[in-house]
Image 1 (cartoon, rainbow over the protein chains, first blue to last red):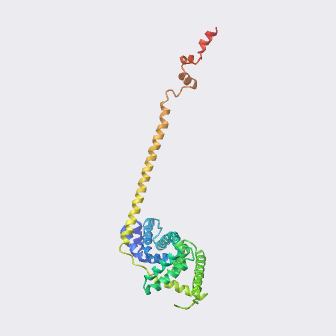
Image 2: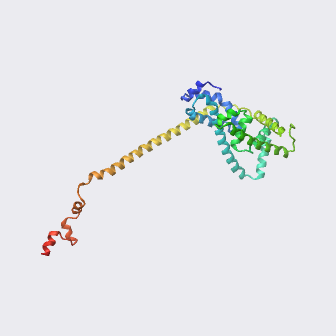
Image 3: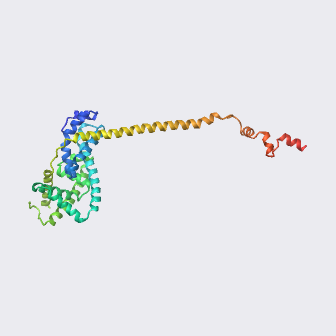
Length: 197
Length: 111
């Protein structure tokens, strides 16, 4: 816990200063998680504000301060999921308006703006983004929380309110799909496993 | 397969390094409070509208109850039978115009 239970109780009781302190304590962690969940830095703050807005209006439903962190993660997961769904719809509409040549030109223009150091990061980001595109938004979030954020199955169980076995099955299937997509990507670039760039 | 798994694990670890926790902008907290207050005013407006709607519904109900109950009390002779009400509506004098004679007159005419 990054804050005392007492502070959460105060925020729950309607103390705005206490709520402010809670936001300041968790802001960076939540921003980071959202950044990796949605993969769009320009929208991270907007989604994070939505998370804290939902927290503000749902704090009175929090049973005990002990479950605060899973609660906050659940709000983060829900807000990120809502964003990803909207984004997918928006992308489908936008891409259908562009010709293939226009899409290629837009990609080339975006690639030219970054420095060489950023390019490596960008490649990793793009590769992971495309691999996670092989699974649904829900599975993308679940897999990112487990594999990238490093949350344990116990923690995920609290966030999702689903039993561990169901989570294991879902995670296994999602990981298999991503792994298949990874193999296919590597095969298309003729790179055997284990070889570093 | 294990090698692919290891590579994927490595890729996920690089992803976390490639996307570090960003710092919040200076505008983060003011914007958050603006959104909270914006939502509060919407909720307040909805609450007020609900109250107005409930008050209007109660007033309309009272008006309807009044309208429905008033004629029942204003009836001239609520205890009168159907025959009496009919006799009041069609007095003997007007029956002649319809060609109907009172019983006494009809008997006298027959004699």
